[in-house]
Length: 148
Image 1 (tube, rainbow, N blue to C red):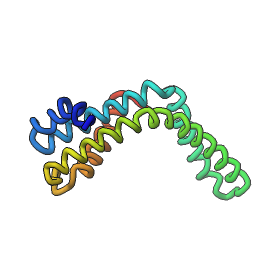
Image 2: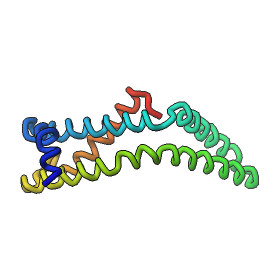
Image 3: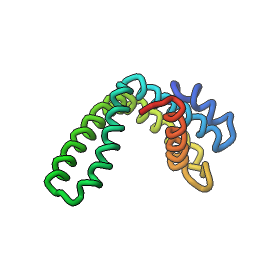
């Protein structure tokens, strides 16, 4: 009940006033934009960029060390440490966005259930359509907003 009073006037308006699948595309865009911006604001983008570049160069070094098992193991340990540091820094924005996204997904599920779960995009349900939209939009927005 509370979810409808919050989301129906805003996101519900997009879904009901734009033809399918454009309403869901608009909702996907807004959510993906919000998640991307939170990720950019909450993480240290310079550190993330540096860690990503370091891991990339270390991957190349790993390929060169395939004949030296001792050095390969040491380098793999170093790569795993960098990867863990990268994951820990990306964990904070995930925690911030998790509950709002779960609430919005609950509302979307209920919205589409009341419509009889119609196919939204090429015979796909709203969930699969949202996933496709958000993956494409996330790649686009991360490039445009320079999020690492």
